Each structure stands twice: as structure tokens, then as C-alpha cells.
Length: 580
Image 1 (cartoon, rainbow, N blue to C red):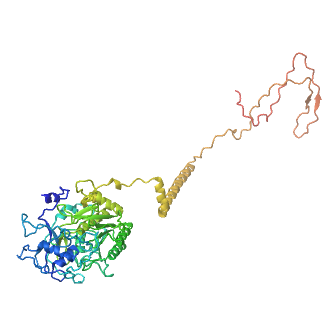
Image 2: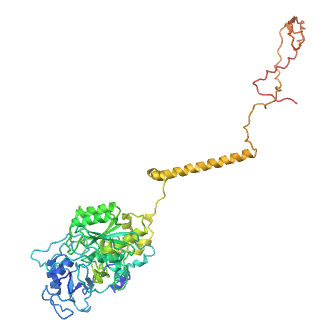
């Protein structure tokens, strides 16, 4: 019942797996040209061939489908089902009830034995990117070493495993495709390479780079983990080829840091990240062979973030010691894997998970000749999240790497009982459809102030020149319109009005009437000078004759004769209005 509710998204809290559910692997006739044995299986899925003793103890004496029993760790029959410890991950690892056992039959659970501590296994296909590669313990059985293969022919074909579509149904990435299919995004996969010859990947795999050899192509894969990741991101859906990728219009770039061995060098991983950035990758997915606790790797990741590249990594294991010098920035998303019932794919460090995605019983592409394979591991979850990041970057190309990570977290489905982020599940299970459709208020662009606009114009010479050209053009147009208006008025005979003035109108020679001076009492008997010569044009006037004035009356003052008008008397004075 818990599996059904989890599949429908109704149960957000992780449930403990039933004791009948185990991790197991179905033995094939050969692997990389050699017959399979427990040491090789332990090295491939646990990162340490010395742990073959754990695998032997989990399977010794248990009847196999053909009736045989395990008595010799070096002799395994094809079709046998080998129970594995809980931390086993990789292509071919399955999770569930053994097909040859009924649910009511007691099966020894595949929990990691307490007597033997889990080794560090960053070199294994574990999705446990926080662990450095481990060396086999002294005296441990090393088993058969895989033989190097040629490009496209690295591994002997193995039978396809059973398929599981719970991850495809749970994520429902097809609901995001009307808004985004990942077009224009280059997703670099730093892992074992990608088998680019597969029909399901045609047209979506770049040549890539082989870091191990220092030259050559990265589009070949001998281990299968990189191909499985690519299938979850860009594969075409179809019968027999696994489900469609989460971002089918994106392109993957294989960066090969592991060829035929799961043991890798941190320097190769750092170089692979740098190569991906140089090639123009917008998202980088780090597989299980990358140790993010290495300072050189962490520095390469930080450099990628500075170039606005989203980096998706597997969450570190709780058994791995944290390196304070290897810190990750906000453009990095740490991913944990889960099963259909919420069971974690690994014992992740508390608080070290940002989001989760399917990582147990996930079906994807196998390498050439193997068809679809179902496996478990954090690298599957990393691939799903990288594909979701491609959807977001394609739908919102203006977002920064940090904003893309925030959108993935803010739209994830809550898991756990507490507040988010949860210590085990982070912000929850990714939701591809919500990640490209949900409106986040914090992403709203604030209105640009005048000072910001001025700074933008001055900081961009091209924009400043354009703005100046527009202003000059508008001014020229306004001047032209005004000139046309003035010309039209002149042509119509409409002279412009003159300003008003207080001066007398031109052409009027008549002076204004003089102001009569006040009467002045004349002096007693003043002499009067009279000009008795008549005025004759052209004749010089004669001498003036002075006539003594008549004596004035003693009591009555003499009247003063009216003076003739003086034309200059009013010059400069305000004109008086003439009387009626």
C-alpha cells in the first residue's frame, strides 16, 4: 500500500523498506569479456573487491533459480540472483522482492553488516560523490580485471534486465514539455562516457572529450553509467529502449574520466569540469566517479559557477569526512536518490541534500547490445535533476545558475514531516512541470529608477549613442514643424503682431497743447521790449525798441498778458488729453 501511495504522490514521508525488499544483481554469462565472480561484482558495485566476503555471506546456501547454491565465490552461473548490501549501486542493481521468493518467504535483508565498516568508495558507480576512491584491503581477493575494449565494443552484450517505469510516472516530465523541452542546452556528463551510437541518442550526443587518454572522443562507454545518465536526460522514447529523457531536445556532452575501471583520479575529474566549461556547457552533471570532497574538484566547480554554469552533484555519504576546504557555492545542487517507497539510495549526510529524485530501480539505456537496463544509484538521480535544470534554463534563459537552483528547490514536492529543507530530503522531490510553470514572486524584475536608467545608458556606449540620436532627431523634427508653420502664416499675409508702445503714433506733427504755467505777479513797472519791425521773408529784422511801461494802479494789480504757446514746453512730459 505504501508503494502505491508513494507512486501517486500521496505519501511524502519516506517509509522503511520491508524486510523482503533487497538489492540484488542478476549474474550474466560474462562482463567485459570475463566470467563474473563475487570479487569482480563487489568491486563494480561496492568499490572494493575485498567486500566479496559480505556478498558471499548474504548468498551462501540460498537456492538459486536453477536449483544450485553458492559454495565458491569464484563460480557463478548465469541467471543467479546475488543479494547485495544496501550501499551497492550501479547498472544492473535492482531493488525489490527476489523473483524466486514469495513475499511471505523470509529473505535475509541486504543491510550492510555491522562487523565490516563501509569503505569509502568515491570511485564506484555509487552516486556517492562525497567519498574518495578506496583501495582493496591487503590480502583481499581482487578477482578478474576488466579488459580494455575498443570504442563502441567495450563490453560483451548482456541480457536486458526487467524494466521499471515508476520514476517516469512519478516525475511526469511530459507535462513540462509544452513549455520547455530543453532546447539549446548543453549538459556535460562527467563520468564513463556515453555510447553515442545508440539509436535512442542519435543527434543528441556531442563528440565530447576523453580526459583519461588526454585525446580522443568521449562518445564511447565501457562501464555504462554515463550512457544510463544520458538516456535519462535526452533519450528518445520507444519500445525496448527505455523511457524518454526528461529534456529530449537538449544535447549531452560526454566527458570521460573512467574507461574500464571504476578507479579515477581527482585531477581528471577537475580537468573534466574545466573542459566542460570551456566547451560551453550550461549544466554539468557529475557522476559517481567524482569526489567532490577533493579541493581541486571543488575549486573547478567554483570556477564553473563563476561562468554561470549549473553543477549537479551527488549528495555526500554520511560516512565520508567533510573537507572544510572543499566548499560548494550556491550554483550547485546536491542530489539524493530515493526509491518508490521513499527509501534513500544511500546513507546521505544529514543536511547535505538539496533535492531528491528517483535513484532506485530506475530503467534507462544500456551500452551497445544490452538494451534497457534497470539499476540503482545516486547518479540516476543526478541525471534527472540535470535534465530538469535543462528544462528551466531553456524556459528562463535570463536566470542565473543560482536562480535555476533556487527554482528547482522552490518547486520541489515536500517530503518528510518537518519544515523544509528537511535534513534527509532537502526541499523534496523535483517537479519538472512546476519548475517551468510556477510563478515565483522573488523572480519579478523591479522597476528601473531614473538613476539606474542613466547608469545603464552611460555604462553602455552603444545605448548612449542610440539615445542621443533619437533625441537629436526629435528636436530636428520639432524645428522643421515650427518653420513650416511660420512660412504658412507669412504666405497668408498674417504679419505677426507688434508689441504695444506708449510713444505717439508716427506722422502726427501736431504737438500736444502746452500746460499753462501758473500766474506770476509781475514786478512793478518792468520795462517791455517790443519788436516793431514786421516779419518779412528774407529781410533781417530791425533793432528792438524799449518802451517804458505805464505806471500801475496803486490798488488794482495789472493783468498779465497771456503768453504765446511754447512748442517745447511739453517735450519729455506725459501728453495731456485735449479738452472737448
